[in-house]
Length: 407
Image (cartoon, rainbow, N blue to C red; front, top):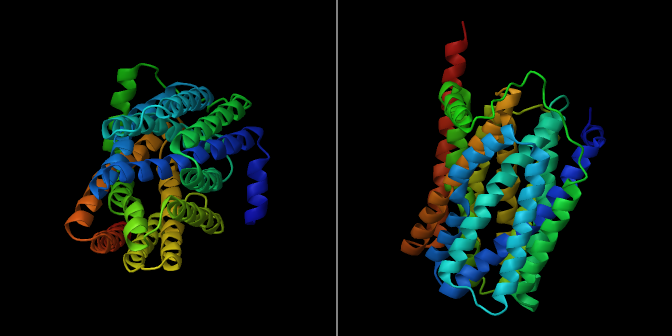
């Protein structure tokens, strides 16, 4: 089955169409959120360390939130969770927009906002991916996850461009109003989904303590999940953290402003869109470790390219390349983690991925510290080299495992 027919088959599902559209609206808000948080943090502090801190604070809740979200996603109706969290995010965004009209942002206020948004986003991210797998588990799970990632990129590109435009032409209050409106649309569209029954073989306990224990037992007993969790976490720490330096590269290397930052953020998501087509074109059902090793290798090379960027055009090419590779890495990690677990454990598997994402703030602080201590260029070179080393290590582990399993 070719890419077109496979995607058409997936979109025949009413629930998937609604989930996809809802995800576009939600991630438009996320795209605006990233641009505004990055720009506001640098504007009020003029400090690369504070920018890194804000990005870190937004992801810190993912560590605990990932576990909680995974458990909730296996206990509570996933449609309800998507609608509820979208509504809460809309209320927060609209409230911040109103308050910011009379009270300017402070470092403490922006930090608290980043924490709050990250906590709720962790539940959204886990639930949407688990629900996409639930809808498509009898077809191509990789295709379903990839198309949901496509929705996130389409929304994030729009949000990044809109956010950059609003910063340049109006103010951040207007941006938060638009962000809240997009979350309202996301909740409204999600409410049109029909309830999807889970596998009848699922015997999920609703006792919170039992679910928490089963979460840790899953991670302890599943060796493949441990390897995927480790590679996902290290990729987050030393790979995705590069975005912390984008506001600094725009301001210092290019001597530009918010609109240019919006262009780079849009380019980031455009690369993610092309990564989806690249993954779907393989027609694989779940991916494999060899694919992950090659992708992480490309991720590291992309960061070395960005380290040597001195013009907007070359920076756009570098950011596009990084996200072409990193987007594919994310998709394969998510799909593999769910494919090696049972139906009633897939929320926890996605929760494990979100925990890995949540540990990413360590990388935000690391690259911010290196950037201030050395330079943005050297910080990118160091992290790119670490990713290349990780890819080589994963290949070696895979080779050893293959040798042991041969007669």
